[in-house]
Length: 227
Image (cartoon, rainbow, N blue to C red):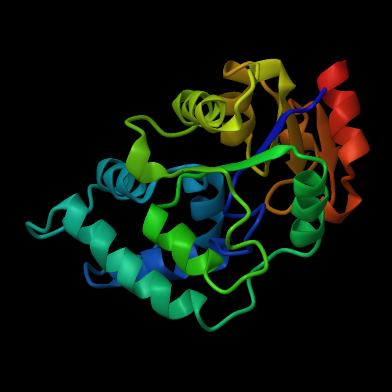
């Protein structure tokens, strides 16, 4: 029986990764450096902004000219906010699935490597703005995906607000990356992967792989958590 569904955000609820990529390069441009799209998606998709800038510094010996990584994260947030307001970013089928879950009294949460500020910017004014019982963001965790901290924290907070016991095996997770799948599996949860960012072959460690959130129904999640 599924009692909760925890969604990744970027690439699952919001098609915001292109804006994250562009905003990251907007910041790096000031230091004479750019990431290729291939490297960004292959290496950094599951990272928090802090982890990304830190990894780029280590990998490419990037010189940030005395500017702290916290300051880079702030600069990226400003660039991202400008970009995201210019597009319709909610992924097709998400509102309908979340509506089904809420109508069936299934708790709904987010566990994302994005900052809370970014998540709120993207949710504001949308049909699902007030749909989430719990939001765990990069601001809340000390270790990003593939570490399970975020999913375990989401489960703990869901148990605090739900009024009934929710076990890890009663949680279905919707992810779009290998790092997210590993994170959720390490937390003992069932995982559905959506091929919005990676191919089926790259996501085959998930319990179920679909091409679109529109394919998912609450019955699929119930069966998955009963297996």
